[in-house]
Amino acid sequence: MADSSTQSLTMNAAALAIMDVIADFTAYPEWTGAVKKAEVTDPGVGARAKRVKFGLDAGLIKDTYELEYSWAPDGLSVSWELVVGQMQKSQHGSYTLRPVGPTTEVTYSLTVQLNVPLVGPLRRKAERTIMDTALKELRKRVEKA
Image (cartoon, rainbow, N blue to C red; front, side, top):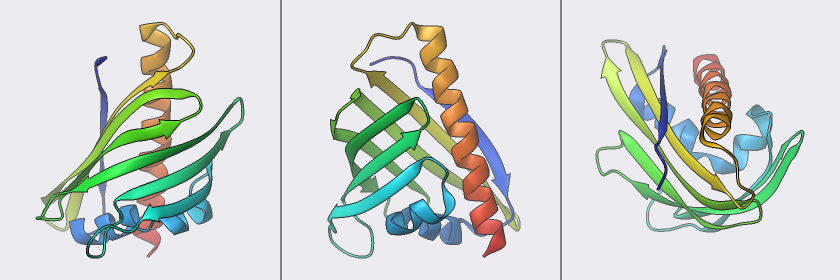
């Protein structure tokens, strides 16, 4: 698999409150710009979904894809893998939360391989843009709550 892109952002919220927002997939269309649809396809066991199908519209990039999630027992990290996608060949991502006093450092890692070849620097730039937007939208949502 290709190298992963990683970004971090500090948020003024408790780690478990942030993870609750991350896990509330059906609310994503309310606060993310690109996710137009999010449907839990396998609720899993407990309060965290195992599989979610997304409808994405980010201007030139439109995709429907399904991700499978693995939640850490301590509630401080989640990772996912692509199950099926139209434009994506693979996707691996994760959020890792690290409490720092009253704030939380949120680290987002992402690797995406598209069905259409994209040279490494362009792919990494797209991943960084996706992560930057996602982290800022997440921070806005959790700090508003």
